[in-house]
Length: 116
Length: 114
Image 1 (cartoon, chains in turn purple, cyan):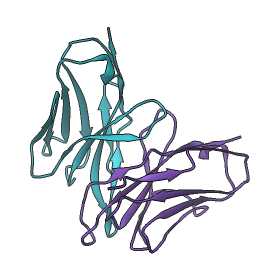
Image 2 (cartoon, chains in turn yellow, red; image 1 turned 45 degrees about the horizontal axis):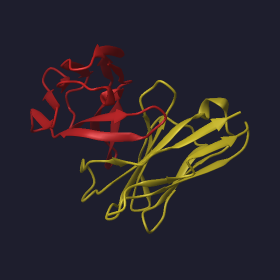
Image 3 (cartoon, chains in turn yellow, blue; image 1 turned 60 degrees about the vertical axis):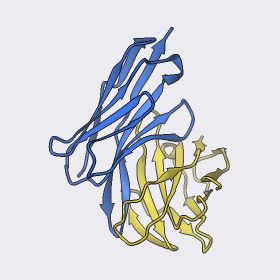
């Protein structure tokens, strides 16, 4: 069974640029959640995708967007990068049998984004 | 709005000591609660998941308890070892839209010294 994988591991961008982060969910899972973890803080929920549709969103601006593909992998896109976007971005996959289910989320190793 | 607090923020103990990490949450309408470990610069490793109908879970030297009515959870680590040094995060599952999300505390940074 393959776990959750994320790419790239590290990324350095400059302000104003755009970035795409990728996540492959664990085999058998249909839901992907993304979290942002700033230095010294706990992870903050960005959004969740279930069967290619957004299924909940945290307090993030529209320039932070996502996508889920038919194979349940996912991308997170950030436009017009700001210094405060520097963080560890974590992806988690889970299996939702039905909406409202609270199945365990399994985390990937994260992508470290640095904005200069 | 659900808020999760972890006390203490940092803890340093000698090897072999038993210790307790505390987690509190403001809204008792949670479903599950999960404890994670995070090594510096790394992702999250799940330690224990307590379902809302349970009061505790055990794995090896770790024991986690949950009291929903008081909004508290504790993680007990027995006979601590230097390899236990890491940040420990508590997170609660709550519903959002048709799915669920984790709300995390800011963590307890543990250092176990020889």
